[in-house]
Length: 125
Image 1 (tube, helix red, strand yellow):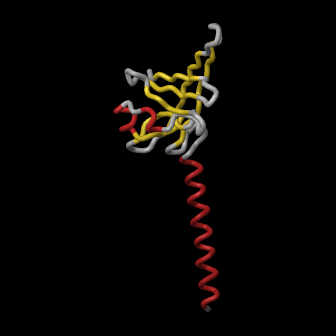
Image 2 (image 1 turned 135 degrees about the vertical axis):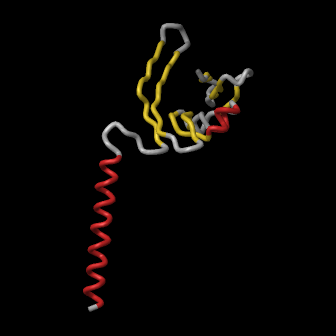
Image 3 (image 1 turned 90 degrees about the vertical axis):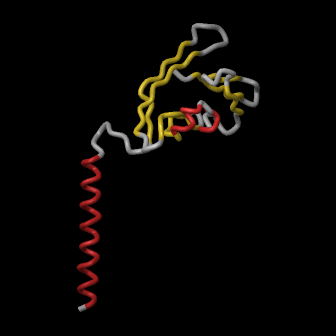
């Protein structure tokens, strides 16, 4: 008798998991982002000036409460909103692991310095 109850309990749990997956697939329809994730929408590069490339990137993010779109390890990411409000850009770890981060003098952005001396400058809109 207990074996039969166990079988029914496992069957009920399996059906419950299936229903949850079914509901989840309908809630996250095509084109919707999961909470806390970002995707790059557009990326434009302008190399018309010698020794200089200007890149403009637009990202779409679905951030959780208290977060805002930012940059982590050179990729769009949801970061703590306080970092963006206080303009302490390097706190969101915007550079790659082997790069150094420095704030611009007016706090309008940051620079990532690679070991070879190449500098990438990013400014916020």
